[in-house]
Picture 1: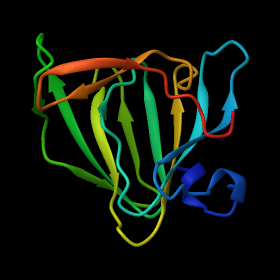
Picture 2 (picture 1 turned 45 degrees about the vertical axis):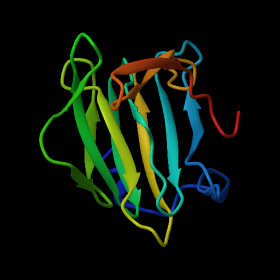
Picture 3 (picture 1 turned 90 degrees about the horizontal axis):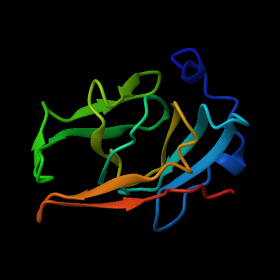
Length: 151
């Protein structure tokens, strides 16, 4: 992943287009047996995810711009506790998620005036996996399947 995001000359415009309201998840490749997938995440200015999990391993490489990542642990009642300080991914940097090292986070574009793009590889077809969104204010979680903006 580090090599992949060390050069920013390969991602097509079709997989790098921000949406004015929502971050976009574009499928770049999915293994035919759903063992892994590679996606681009395109963040418009100021866009962010809700707190969510993945339920599989993930490797995130920053291609353009920057992302702010907040990690959480959830207790049995889905109350969230911050895990460490927020971190910032900048171009060429790599981050990780998995159920064994920490899988719950919230991500936002570090910039309010431009798009940011990261490349993600997951240990499954992330657009098909039934995952969870957490509501930190009320201590609940809800299932969701993310899909893809281009599929």
